Image (cartoon, rainbow, N blue to C red):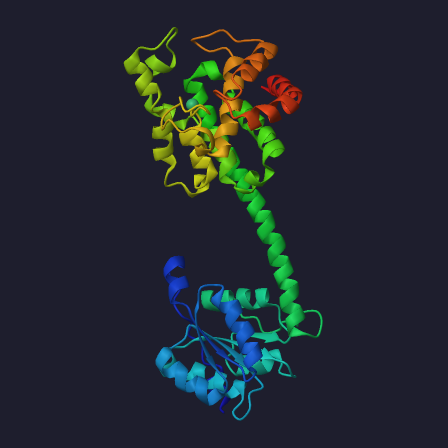
Length: 377
Ligand SMILES: [Fe+2]
């Protein structure tokens, strides 16, 4: 084939906005090894690309004519017509839609040969799947050609995949931790904002969150597997956003109408958060049921005993402990010892006996938590 034809500038697909592009990316995989095609398909499909496969150059040319792929991942060493030959045709004939071409070689094909055939990139087998994805991205973005790729370490393609899988798992774990930290900070900022409005409670959400986590860990640690639980602890009173300041800050007893409005805050909170996936689970039940009582005389639903979700039963005690040991507009704070006595008195009436039992065992630890938080406030 004439040299002038190889020198023809490569037409690259237009860059589309990210969302549209991820939907419309069409990747054609051409390799005679069905096992490798399966690995390639798994890799490429994970990036939400549409994928087609071909086992020979002839089959690939036929498919590309009608499907017009965005990129072709093309093995050089195909039986019959070679990958280099197909690459030249894909680049020279408009009928294929000028796809980007990533050549895969397990042999001696070098960068200059790939360049002459019009390829955009060359990867040596075994290749890293992460490297392949990055290369496809670069080719589709039209960034600089990569025709001198080194093979992945080791001689086995599966090993290269396993190594990348392990790297991805590490990255994913780190990102998950980062995301959870960001969620917690966001939720804490929201609770702080609520407490600025209702100054009397001062860091109440943070204290009850810590008390409730301690009690949950002692009573039923498996509940902590549900990540929504602690967000429920932190956001339990978010429904107070719908209660007027005049009621929240009122010194002295509330009128029946005011009490009714105040008792709506768990319902308002649960409605506000009902569509938030972060709270979907035990956390949302804590928000709705944290004022229920073991004897059924609580609100908003008058649930009784085991009908009350366990997270909410635990939280009810933590919330009451902090209410009693903090200054509020409507009462003076009790000493820690008096609050403990009051909780023991309410065993089996306001509080679940199992939760009281655990509280009695952990009470000194909770007291230290209160002390530590007071020092850092
Ligand atoms: Fe509440």
